[in-house]
Image 1 (cartoon, helix red, strand yellow):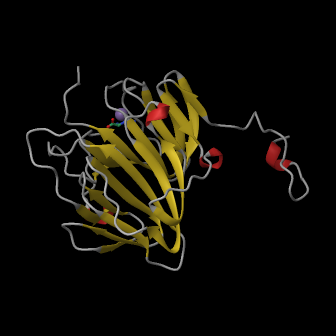
Image 2 (cartoon, helix red, strand yellow):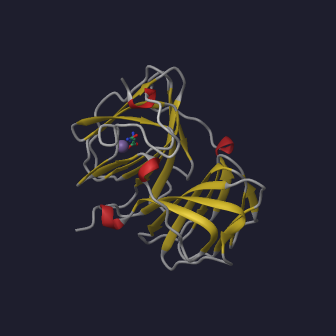
Length: 265
Ligand code: UGY
Ligand code: MN
């Protein structure tokens, strides 16, 4: 019998506490289902809990997190962090977002914002429901080019492309692709049922992956993991990786990837 088939009184859990934990943390990857990611509170946000998914203590060279913001909550005044870029993607609810140098905007599901290093911003819940936002912080790797401008947009404004020639793949590059001012990408990756990567990838770039829709099997190192919506994966440099969608509907994830910079020696 499976754990969810046992009837248990209110306040008790079915058996299977160990056998049904999907999460793993390894030296160069981590797979985190949301149920185990406990709550943090952050001084710069009011009426907000944060679920921190990736951080330097894990091995990642960036921080990634989900903010759950109550109505009338959000950043306390303006947030500004020297040398650090922010990226926000609205998972559900309505965000009032303002970034110095850009017109303020209301961002709904699929809306996103890029905040250049050291630029003040505010992020507030402007609706009656809880606001859920996926956030990312990354220290900017400056080169001999001006820093990027702020961006407030929506995924519907970004074309779906497919450079692979493989049926059933779709890509949305939320940040300008190939623009050397940017040192990371945030890409929506779409998969029709039956599509998968042509090869196992092994590359220097790191990933933070947030599963948005659908389900599938993810190869990390030499282990397969079953993943579905709301799961998070950190992949360190040179972590072998492959995705096989399963199920009957499209699968989609939002993928952080550090790019456009040479290896630091
Ligand atoms: O672009 C990428 O690195 C991407 N194909 N990797 C991934 O989805 N794990
Ligand atoms: Mn990859």
